[in-house]
Length: 101
Image 1: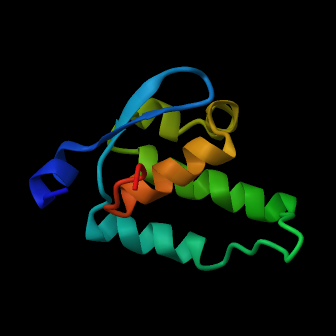
Image 2: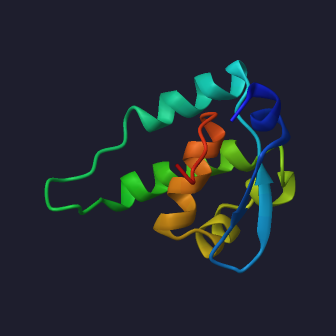
């Protein structure tokens, strides 16, 4: 995938059945995102605390800002459209990676 392809974004279907185009984060957005993502922890058994799930929602909000600002501002709505698969794809696309690889 070329840089031009990445800039066009990646189509991701979320848990609500809607498809949104996610583009790579800018450096400014990446700073905010990494500040949150670097503090998330997944336990050895795969469990997460409520605090870590809140951080997951916060990081998703940053990734959604460009494609759907109204959604990004509503954390309850983000929780309703995310599942683990769409979250993983969202984070990959936001980081400039093809989630399909």
